[in-house]
Amino acid sequence: PQPPQIKLSPLPNLIFASRWLQLPLYVGLILAQAVYVFQFWVELVHLIEAAFGNQTALAMLVKSTGYKAMAIFGADGTTVVGYEPVKALNETILMLVVLALIDVVMISNLLIMVIIGGYETFVSRLRLDGHPDQPEWLNQVNASVLKVKLATAIIGISSIHLLKTFINADNYTEKVLLWQTVIHIAFLFSALAIAMSDRIMHPPGAAGDH
Image 1: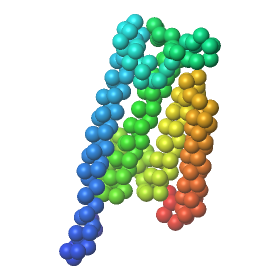
Image 2 (image 1 turned 180 degrees about the horizontal axis):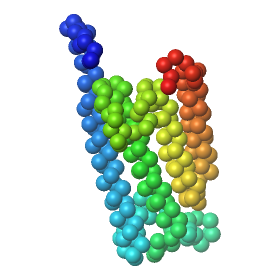
Image 3 (image 1 turned 30 degrees about the vertical axis):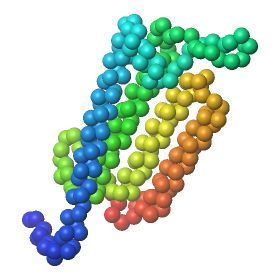
Image 4 (image 1 turned 30 degrees about the horizontal axis):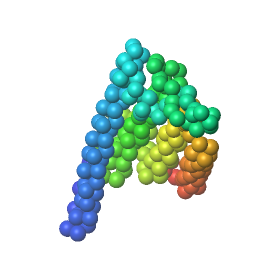
Protein backbone atom coordinates (compact mmCIF):
# COMPACT_ATOMS: atom_id res chain seq x y z
CA PRO A 1 0.00 0.00 0.00
CA GLN A 2 1.15 3.51 -0.85
CA PRO A 3 1.68 5.96 2.03
CA PRO A 4 -1.06 8.57 2.39
CA GLN A 5 -0.49 11.86 0.56
CA ILE A 6 0.44 14.70 2.89
CA LYS A 7 -1.44 17.90 2.16
CA LEU A 8 0.55 21.05 2.78
CA SER A 9 -0.86 24.46 3.57
CA PRO A 10 -0.43 27.08 0.79
CA LEU A 11 2.78 28.72 2.04
CA PRO A 12 4.77 25.52 2.71
CA ASN A 13 3.44 24.14 -0.58
CA LEU A 14 4.71 27.25 -2.42
CA ILE A 15 8.09 27.05 -0.72
CA PHE A 16 8.42 23.35 -1.51
CA ALA A 17 7.33 23.89 -5.13
CA SER A 18 10.04 26.54 -5.55
CA ARG A 19 12.51 23.70 -6.08
CA TRP A 20 11.19 23.48 -9.67
CA LEU A 21 12.87 26.83 -10.35
CA GLN A 22 16.06 24.79 -10.66
CA LEU A 23 14.67 22.86 -13.62
CA PRO A 24 15.80 25.45 -16.25
CA LEU A 25 19.29 25.23 -14.79
CA TYR A 26 19.48 21.50 -15.40
CA VAL A 27 17.99 21.92 -18.89
CA GLY A 28 20.74 24.47 -19.55
CA LEU A 29 23.38 21.96 -18.45
CA ILE A 30 21.88 19.42 -20.88
CA LEU A 31 22.31 21.96 -23.68
CA ALA A 32 25.89 22.56 -22.53
CA GLN A 33 26.40 18.78 -22.74
CA ALA A 34 25.20 18.89 -26.38
CA VAL A 35 27.75 21.63 -27.13
CA TYR A 36 30.51 19.45 -25.64
CA VAL A 37 29.42 16.51 -27.81
CA PHE A 38 29.57 18.74 -30.90
CA GLN A 39 33.01 20.07 -29.90
CA PHE A 40 34.27 16.51 -29.36
CA TRP A 41 33.27 15.45 -32.87
CA VAL A 42 34.73 18.60 -34.44
CA GLU A 43 38.11 17.89 -32.83
CA LEU A 44 37.92 14.19 -33.72
CA VAL A 45 37.15 14.96 -37.38
CA HIS A 46 40.07 17.39 -37.51
CA LEU A 47 42.34 14.73 -36.01
CA ILE A 48 41.31 12.14 -38.61
CA GLU A 49 41.72 14.65 -41.46
CA ALA A 50 45.15 15.72 -40.17
CA ALA A 51 46.22 12.06 -39.99
CA PHE A 52 45.51 11.83 -43.73
CA GLY A 53 47.57 14.94 -44.48
CA ASN A 54 44.97 17.73 -44.44
CA GLN A 55 47.03 20.84 -43.68
CA THR A 56 44.03 23.02 -42.80
CA ALA A 57 42.86 20.51 -40.17
CA LEU A 58 46.43 20.22 -38.87
CA ALA A 59 46.69 23.99 -38.52
CA MET A 60 43.43 24.04 -36.54
CA LEU A 61 44.74 21.33 -34.20
CA VAL A 62 48.03 23.18 -33.69
CA LYS A 63 46.12 26.35 -32.85
CA SER A 64 43.63 24.65 -30.49
CA THR A 65 46.33 22.75 -28.57
CA GLY A 66 48.76 25.68 -28.38
CA TYR A 67 51.56 23.50 -29.77
CA LYS A 68 54.65 25.24 -31.09
CA ALA A 69 57.44 23.61 -33.07
CA MET A 70 61.16 24.40 -32.90
CA ALA A 71 61.81 28.08 -32.21
CA ILE A 72 63.58 30.25 -34.79
CA PHE A 73 66.06 32.65 -33.19
CA GLY A 74 67.19 36.01 -34.52
CA ALA A 75 70.72 37.18 -35.30
CA ASP A 76 71.51 37.67 -31.61
CA GLY A 77 70.81 34.00 -30.93
CA THR A 78 68.43 34.67 -28.03
CA THR A 79 65.39 36.47 -29.46
CA VAL A 80 62.66 34.17 -30.79
CA VAL A 81 61.45 35.54 -34.12
CA GLY A 82 59.12 32.67 -34.99
CA TYR A 83 58.55 28.94 -35.04
CA GLU A 84 59.15 26.33 -37.68
CA PRO A 85 55.94 25.39 -39.51
CA VAL A 86 54.28 22.11 -38.57
CA LYS A 87 53.93 20.05 -41.75
CA ALA A 88 52.71 16.73 -40.37
CA LEU A 89 50.91 15.25 -37.39
CA ASN A 90 53.48 14.23 -34.79
CA GLU A 91 53.27 12.29 -31.54
CA THR A 92 53.13 15.38 -29.33
CA ILE A 93 50.22 16.93 -31.22
CA LEU A 94 48.46 13.55 -31.25
CA MET A 95 48.82 13.18 -27.48
CA LEU A 96 47.63 16.74 -26.86
CA VAL A 97 44.55 16.23 -29.03
CA VAL A 98 43.72 12.86 -27.45
CA LEU A 99 44.09 14.38 -23.97
CA ALA A 100 41.80 17.23 -25.04
CA LEU A 101 39.21 14.64 -26.15
CA ILE A 102 39.54 12.81 -22.83
CA ASP A 103 39.14 16.15 -21.08
CA VAL A 104 35.84 16.74 -22.92
CA VAL A 105 34.63 13.26 -21.92
CA MET A 106 35.53 13.81 -18.25
CA ILE A 107 33.80 17.20 -18.16
CA SER A 108 30.81 15.56 -19.83
CA ASN A 109 30.81 12.91 -17.07
CA LEU A 110 30.92 15.71 -14.51
CA LEU A 111 27.91 17.33 -16.17
CA ILE A 112 26.01 14.03 -16.04
CA MET A 113 26.71 13.68 -12.32
CA VAL A 114 25.55 17.24 -11.67
CA ILE A 115 22.44 16.92 -13.85
CA ILE A 116 21.24 13.52 -12.62
CA GLY A 117 22.54 13.68 -9.05
CA GLY A 118 21.51 17.29 -8.53
CA TYR A 119 18.02 16.77 -9.94
CA GLU A 120 17.54 13.61 -7.86
CA THR A 121 18.80 15.32 -4.71
CA PHE A 122 17.29 18.80 -4.92
CA VAL A 123 14.32 18.68 -7.31
CA SER A 124 12.48 15.38 -7.68
CA ARG A 125 12.98 11.62 -7.70
CA LEU A 126 13.73 10.10 -11.07
CA ARG A 127 12.20 6.77 -9.98
CA LEU A 128 14.85 4.66 -11.70
CA ASP A 129 14.61 1.73 -9.27
CA GLY A 130 14.84 -1.49 -11.26
CA HIS A 131 15.93 0.25 -14.46
CA PRO A 132 18.75 -1.77 -16.11
CA ASP A 133 20.73 1.39 -16.93
CA GLN A 134 20.45 3.01 -13.51
CA PRO A 135 23.91 4.36 -12.53
CA GLU A 136 25.36 2.45 -9.58
CA TRP A 137 26.44 5.65 -7.83
CA LEU A 138 22.84 6.92 -7.87
CA ASN A 139 21.67 4.26 -5.41
CA GLN A 140 22.84 6.19 -2.34
CA VAL A 141 23.13 9.70 -3.78
CA ASN A 142 22.75 12.67 -1.45
CA ALA A 143 24.26 16.14 -1.24
CA SER A 144 27.29 14.90 0.72
CA VAL A 145 28.06 11.96 -1.57
CA LEU A 146 27.57 14.20 -4.61
CA LYS A 147 30.17 16.68 -3.30
CA VAL A 148 32.75 13.92 -2.88
CA LYS A 149 32.13 12.53 -6.37
CA LEU A 150 32.29 16.00 -7.95
CA ALA A 151 35.55 16.74 -6.14
CA THR A 152 37.00 13.46 -7.42
CA ALA A 153 35.89 14.28 -10.97
CA ILE A 154 37.46 17.74 -10.76
CA ILE A 155 40.77 16.16 -9.68
CA GLY A 156 40.65 13.93 -12.77
CA ILE A 157 40.03 16.94 -15.03
CA SER A 158 42.83 18.89 -13.34
CA SER A 159 45.17 15.91 -13.84
CA ILE A 160 44.44 15.88 -17.58
CA HIS A 161 45.12 19.62 -17.84
CA LEU A 162 48.37 19.24 -15.90
CA LEU A 163 49.48 16.35 -18.11
CA LYS A 164 48.73 18.42 -21.23
CA THR A 165 50.86 21.24 -19.80
CA PHE A 166 53.79 18.91 -19.02
CA ILE A 167 53.70 17.37 -22.51
CA ASN A 168 53.80 20.87 -24.03
CA ALA A 169 56.07 22.24 -21.29
CA ASP A 170 58.46 23.98 -23.72
CA ASN A 171 55.73 26.51 -24.50
CA TYR A 172 55.06 27.43 -20.87
CA THR A 173 57.08 29.40 -18.36
CA GLU A 174 58.29 27.86 -15.13
CA LYS A 175 55.86 30.14 -13.27
CA VAL A 176 52.87 28.70 -15.16
CA LEU A 177 54.06 25.12 -14.58
CA LEU A 178 54.57 25.80 -10.88
CA TRP A 179 51.16 27.42 -10.36
CA GLN A 180 49.30 24.70 -12.26
CA THR A 181 50.99 22.11 -10.05
CA VAL A 182 50.15 24.08 -6.89
CA ILE A 183 46.50 24.46 -7.97
CA HIS A 184 46.27 20.72 -8.69
CA ILE A 185 47.67 19.92 -5.23
CA ALA A 186 45.12 22.35 -3.74
CA PHE A 187 42.34 20.40 -5.50
CA LEU A 188 43.74 17.17 -4.04
CA PHE A 189 43.73 18.52 -0.49
CA SER A 190 40.26 20.02 -0.96
CA ALA A 191 38.86 16.67 -2.13
CA LEU A 192 40.60 14.91 0.78
CA ALA A 193 39.11 17.42 3.24
CA ILE A 194 35.61 16.94 1.77
CA ALA A 195 35.95 13.14 1.93
CA MET A 196 37.21 13.26 5.53
CA SER A 197 34.38 15.60 6.55
CA ASP A 198 31.84 13.25 4.98
CA ARG A 199 33.40 10.29 6.79
CA ILE A 200 33.27 12.12 10.13
CA MET A 201 29.62 13.13 9.65
CA HIS A 202 28.60 9.72 8.26
CA PRO A 203 30.91 7.09 9.82
CA PRO A 204 30.76 3.55 8.41
CA GLY A 205 28.22 1.38 10.17
CA ALA A 206 26.15 4.32 11.37
CA ALA A 207 22.40 3.96 11.46
CA GLY A 208 20.87 4.29 8.01
CA ASP A 209 24.00 3.13 6.21
CA HIS A 210 23.72 0.16 3.86
